[in-house]
Length: 93
Image 1 (cartoon, rainbow, N blue to C red):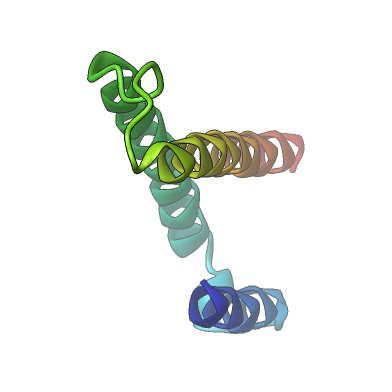
Image 2: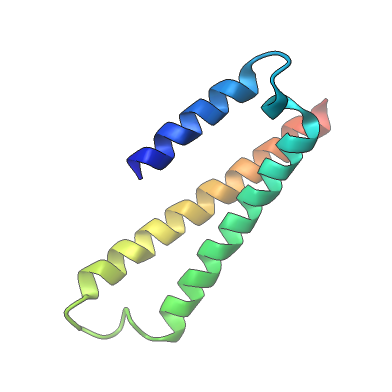
């Protein structure tokens, strides 16, 4: 997670530099689409977690399942918010 956060920091800094290739509208659109897909993936994983009734069982891995639940919710919400914010900002010009 630390490595991913460092990579994302460099990505965001590069996007903000004038004339940088990562700041081009086509790549920003692609980033927003990937963020939305990541949110869908998180929702899919959460649906799988509920469908298998892993949260209702008191197995040895119940703490991991609850951490997975919280992380899945957080990642999905942040991903959808990032996509929606980008679309909102883009629509306003």
